[in-house]
Length: 502
Ligand code: AHR
Image 1: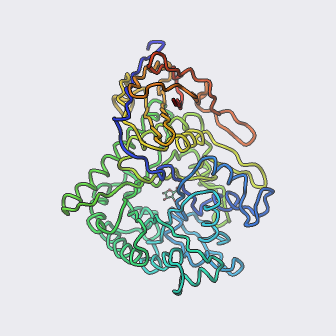
Image 2: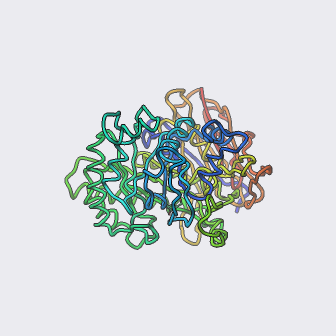
Image 3: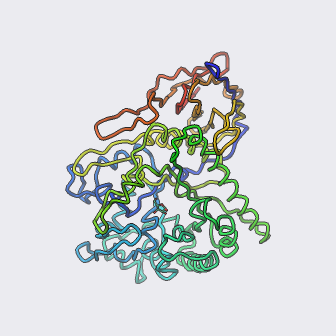
């Protein structure tokens, strides 16, 4: 291994993937663990507003500029009666949540969540229950949320104090219906039928909505690929997106292999796009189905702790992964992979947002704090709007346990036409050497580096904790434009954001 590895990149406004749909920076809040109760909602907290929402958490969500939040599940939605969560809070039932073996008090429901989402500036991606319920409950929820008034369900909403319709645009037709853990698991044909009939009814109530059909729970499911083909065979003309879910992990503590897992995400995306196009060809359809990667993240740290949690409590501390520095690098590579596929992936949700496998953590009655993965998510969401470019990259590669030809440099770039800024996102996967980046930025004449943000740490296992911030970015990177060429050192194992403007 040399002391320094050379990587090259050619960037042009003409080499592009396509316009980025802002919803690619979406996230997810499920009624699970402490995401809702003690997460976004804690009426007794010193920062709580009149509705009981923690304003310290809201500030962090706003800082992330989250455009879309999936709600209310997840596995939870497959046993949820949405009617339990509307109307006077004091008359709402306490229910057993069978998905997470918890008790759901229903203090927060559809209207409260819509109110919170509006306050943080996010749209909602609403999931309907196709596990224990079906098209009837789903179309009633669309009517309750989106119909202006003058019908039973819309007037009920108005009587609950919500005169204006919520106008929710994006809806998920159930959740992970292929999974044996799911309440109301279905075969692909069973799900395809219930999904298409629900979709028809929901779009009859509001033709402006967009619908996401459930793809496989992960590419590791034995039914993967056949599931997508069958579901789309039933639903093709009624739905707009198919979902992808995948969680990544470093179970063997093999860092070079862990850092390469974004190649698996890329392969998964390409495979699902191919299945969509196969069904398109088979149906002689002119319509293209887009992808909604509506659950992705690192998830494994909390698996053992979760086995010890007593069932049936309200807001147990479930799925509370504490992320380290290497997880932040992996999340960075996953975000870059989503951007590289921005022509096909229109929605993506970092699962989840608060306390549950989340970038934001809270202490009951205490502070909110930022995990390591908060930073790559924030940087891409804030600076990664506009057009995804398709840089030509030349990088040395390595092999790992499960992958071959893994480039040391994982990178992409975004051009924001509105303020004429160019932003390069880059991860150096090398554990030994910095990368010397030489960028041909041809048609970005007179551009200069305005900031080179770096997230680096000598300890890959370093974590942030409440009141202990070990992993934070600095803006001391050395990127510069010299004689029209971009030059930068990307430290070994680092996340980089290089921002250029005229
Ligand atoms: O995000 C946590 C869980 O992971 C979701 O509830 C489920 O959809 C997936 O299995």
